[in-house]
Length: 112
Ligand code: 5GP
Ligand code: ZN
Image (cartoon, rainbow, N blue to C red):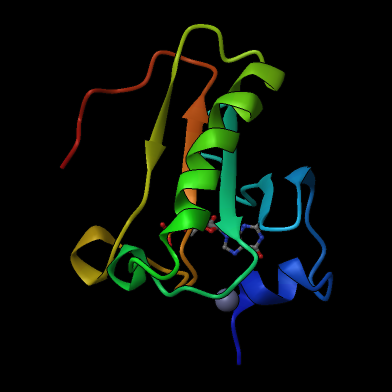
């Protein structure tokens, strides 16, 4: 499958690792939109939030256990935002489920 995030997980495309375990990989966004901009992804390929089911949602729960650990390690003491763009209207450009962690500044409240 021609998925850039699967290639990042496989080490075929270089990335800056922030966190890794058997289920999850986190790395720095190549085009940061905030001083801290990290992507957290399941190692297993899921296309988007639309592909989360009772059979695979444990990895999503695990991602949300890991996110606060990453935020603490990154010293995001003032808070941070977690975003997942799903589909065309949201501007999803990479079709491998990912959660953006954005922080390190006071973020705009603009949501749409
Ligand atoms: P989306 O727009 O799908 O929510 O987010 C995709 C994100 O992946 C974008 O923020 C983009 O900068 C990031 N991205 C795309 N290709 C690469 C890459 O090869 N390496 C890294 N580190 N980030 C990437
Ligand atoms: Zn993938």
